[in-house]
Length: 101
Image 1 (cartoon, rainbow, N blue to C red):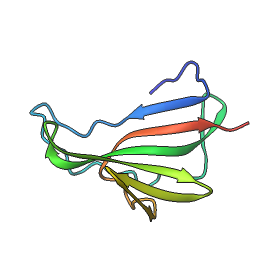
Image 2 (cartoon, one colour; image 1 turned 135 degrees about the vertical axis):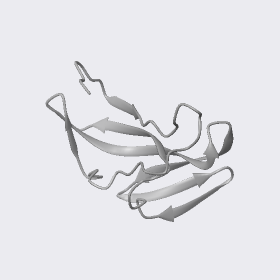
Image 3 (tube, rainbow, N blue to C red; image 1 turned 30 degrees about the vertical axis):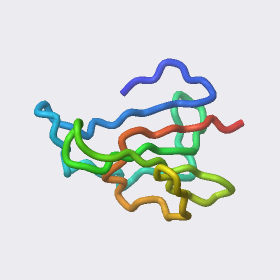
Image 4 (spheres, rainbow, N blue to C red; image 1 turned 180 degrees about the vertical axis):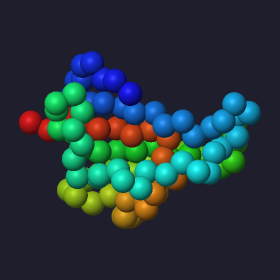
C-alpha cells in the first residue's frame, strides 16, 4: 500500500469479505501496534475502529471501539463498556488513526 499524503485522520479499510461476500476468518492484526504507527513519515495512533460481527456483508452487526484517556470502550447501540483492544482484531473492518504532533 502506498500513501502519498496524509491529513489529521487516516482511515484504513480492511478487506473482510471474499468475492462471494462471505466473511473471511483468516484475517488477523497480530502485529498491529495500538501505541503508534509511522505512515508517510508521520506518526499516527489508532483512536477508533469499526467492527463487523456476523458471517456476511449483508448480515451482521457493527460496533465501534473508541479510545479515551488511554482506555478502550466498545460502543454498541445504546451501551458503552470498557474493554481491552481485541487480540488479533479479527472483526475489525475500519481503522481510524489520528496524526500526532
